[in-house]
Length: 135
Length: 135
Length: 135
Length: 135
Image 1 (cartoon, each protein chain N blue to C red):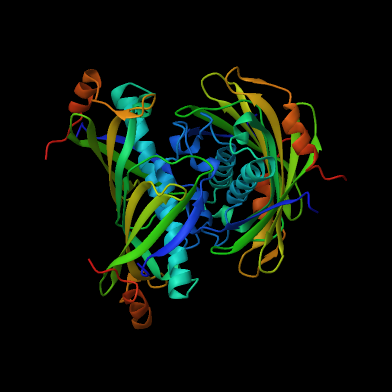
Image 2: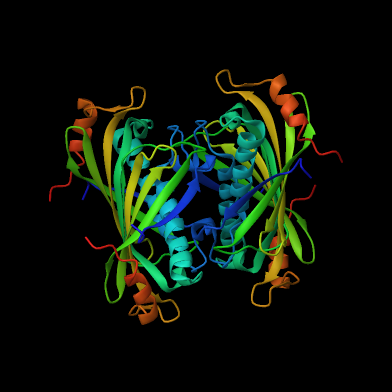
């Protein structure tokens, strides 16, 4: 429970589409915001996002969202490897708690200068470990 | 002063570009969020954005913004006509107050069912009038 | 082979991010364009996207892409159910053929008026069947 | 006439909004694509966009656009100064020629390393001059 990091997002008009609801791609934008804030607030490093590269993302759509709604995203670490880790996101409507989507992202520790994968630095590793949610 | 409506936005990584700063288009996304929240919070109508159509927007870029910054947008009404009105936006960096951009938007009262312009409804007109900033 | 539908996309500057490469979310935008064009060109219905709702998307990132590149997306149908089907996308760099990403999307036949899932209409079903790629 | 650079863009579903039409911000995305392709194709430098910074943009909305339409953008240089120049964009619906929007952008020659404005390099200056549309 305390291992979950939480943010709120406001649904912008530009994030909806002609079907009247939030466009499927916008959910991935919300999840990326959740990850960078998780890095910043939970790991204490605003620049942390710059040490990782996305290896995979998934999103399961459970219910539609609409313009001007306030949404809630809970983020946690579900797997921690040597070079990569997996985060899970749960998106809900703030007012009702209705589940809107579930997402995952696999992030790989990456050296952008030399363009190669690296081991997750040990200090960051311990911080991520403390956020790990046991199955 | 009290006529200014204020919101904060967090700069998402997806809103930056390969030049390392916030992409020029993202500022317009922030301004649209400021307008819909202004409609919602200052005029008491979450659906208000649906009664207007954009006639024109401008943005003057004053300084660069970066990922993970918190920005502040002040919005006010600078002109109120029969069928349209103009809002002005000032975007600053929250922490330092540094001015990042100024923007305007001309919004026209629009009947999307019949696809034609209309006069601004009188009740909304009075609310917008109370937000008008005199030159 | 002939069952694959192909489009090209140009990488916009606004689709890159401060890490100098194409933002991870942009790949999902490209895949959505590939699906709507597949619907339009392969199934002969420009409005077809409006009869489906996204149930799930995935993206595996294989290599980075950069501003001003021309990318190629191959789209095919990998599963066809009663109410839903799955499409697969392969994103490559046009000039070199380098693989950039693989994606999938599960689309459910949906009645937006009554807000409920429906069976895939039989005529459309036959068209999708002809695009089905056997494992 | 020959001084106008022309591109086509396809309207993505993610670029529309809940009002059923193309979101006002998307027009600015189209104009940015037109500018980078103008730089690439007309000036022969794919990286040219990286030597300029946006000082101002405007967009006048003339008519609505919709998902899956093909649009045409004509771009020309309307002013050429020592450190900056202005481009003009005309956005039309390809099939009908209907005018959808007019836009402008002021671009300033910028040294991102030293973070200061510079004079437009003379070789590029001559190329832009040849694209200048006389009033």
